[in-house]
Image (cartoon, rainbow, N blue to C red; front, side, top):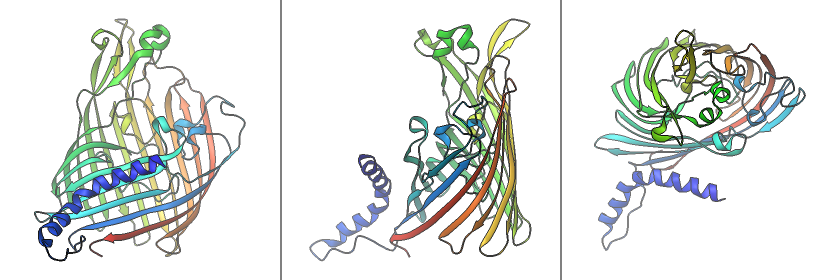
Amino acid sequence: MASMLKTAAIALGLLAPLAAPCIAQAQTEAGGKERPPLVTDNVTVELYGSVQLDAIYDFNRMDPNWVGAFRPSKIPTTPDLFGEDGQANFSARQTLFGISGAAPVNGQDVKVSFEFDLFGSGSNEGETTFHLQRASVEWGRVLAGYDKSLLMDPDLFPNIIDFWGPAGMIYVKNAGIRYAFVKSDNAYFAASLELPGNDVDPGLIRILDPALGANLTSTQKYPDLLMAGRFSGDWGHVRLGGVVRRVGYETAGSPGGEPNGGEMGWGLNLTGVFNLGENSVFRAGGVYGEGIASYFNDGGTDLAPELDTVALTVEAQPAEIYGVMAYFEQAWNEQWSSAIGFSRTHLNNTNLQAGDAFHNGDYASVNLLYKPNDALLVGGELLYGTREDHNGDEGEDVRVQFSLRYSYGVTVMGRQ
């Protein structure tokens, strides 16, 4: 209950500025006369979201904390690590709730969005609890807050019912600020500063120097610089995004944080969505870079130790990584549709990463979905994933998922 009250308070706090013009108008105009209504036609507040139940069966096994999502990086490569094969699960974690509002300021709407689901992560990994998805404000060409990264293509995610989605695509939400230099129906170009965090793998340093390996941690000295451009038409769109960043590390508890340092990371993400007639869509993307695993949907690390076998020195190395995905979607009629596709995340490991470090993850799925109206969706999905470690160990999982989702949206204030 306390968490729900806290979340509601945050939502009201985000939307309060939108109501300010109305409140001011009411106080100014009321005087000694009858107070006018608080709501005006210039302010809009909408409630939206969905309630979803996923019925899942894994023929192999997945990390118990991640049975509600299909992540190749969470597939065990050690036999029976999480028990014998076969596991059933019911999950309502994809349930979503959002509040959005808009009010005009100097001729342009200020748009505020607050959104969360129930998929616990981080310290709440494996729990059904509030999980922030969006908390941002947009005014004209400026967007600030917690939202989808500029590096990702927001329209690339395929029409599937798995929560996590293809491993080898860029999919991350960050806190940051962005400015759109070009913003039209057919063209978009923007730059942003974001803070995604870094993933540093101490690797075999844990064995060579346990004290050092236990205290090595990531550091974010500067925000990441991102740019992206998009061209659109009736045929679909193509989009290119790029990032330059400093991937840093330091030693907690040591004088000056030493040993410490940082290396440059960079990456490019090329994506496209193509309309193949009225009923077919093809979505594809490829991403490559160094030190950008934190932007990937699944798998990899940003920075790892590398041994120079000639000089016999150890240096921090931004991990080279690439990802690909391709999905084809077909609408059979107005109610029935399918999506089939494949994705991969591949990390070129450094020579001082441990044998069980992530090396490669494959993700594939096919589904059949039924949507009798705009609100209700039911369907089934077959998923297959594999994980390969640095030392060559492999694991796989086959999953069947059936989902029921009811979506809603209502304007509760202002413009209808």
